[in-house]
Length: 306
Image (cartoon, rainbow, N blue to C red):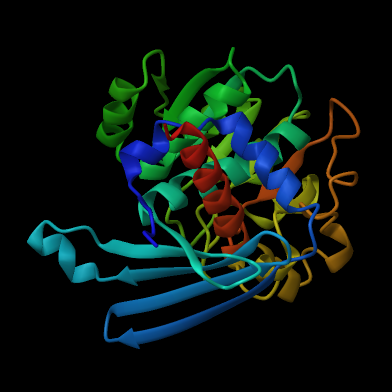
């Protein structure tokens, strides 16, 4: 039996962002995922295995290799592979391009959060950070909020200008505080270990989407932002105890566990209650989202085959 490999370009050609958010929502209606991560390290290099099993959907292992020294050889720092297994038999169903799954999982998770929590009339979107994820966020939010106007801010303005060149109509902000104050949706994907967005800058009715902080020592917003907002996460299992954005303020008593209101497994509770409230969504990722995304990719790829 031939096992398909779905490459980046052929996979992306058959995908759409709204379809993915629907698949993610449906995935969370199934039994809760079992997930597990393992890390192996050799100096600065890391081998990470993330696995998930959702009864009725299947199982997945996503392997990532992080080799910081690759940059000096003009090679990608992060590489990997994604294996998708049949739920009943455990037989390998497909190999899916690592970067394809990561791109669509990450931005799709944030878009689902925004569709549930942001004001539906939101039109001004600020992207904080100008890396690879920022371009994916522009694509995803353009699909979910088709009338949106985009602004980007980055510590290095030239990188923000490079992104704006790739995204017609995007403006470049030079002052972050001003840009935050003018936005209705703020989506942040930085490598910050200390807050770059201040709660005192926030305005009624805004939605914050936080992606960048993925380690225990990383944060993108300060305690005030969390205290002023109604706070949601994509998964309690992958954020609590793992991600500094949530765990540091919990450990210091700035917020309590009851301040984390819901995750994607409780969609009825993940809603905006008024036009004036500030909502905050922490995108923590997780192998269960990789599994849902990979299953969606395989389904769309298979449907497109002659």
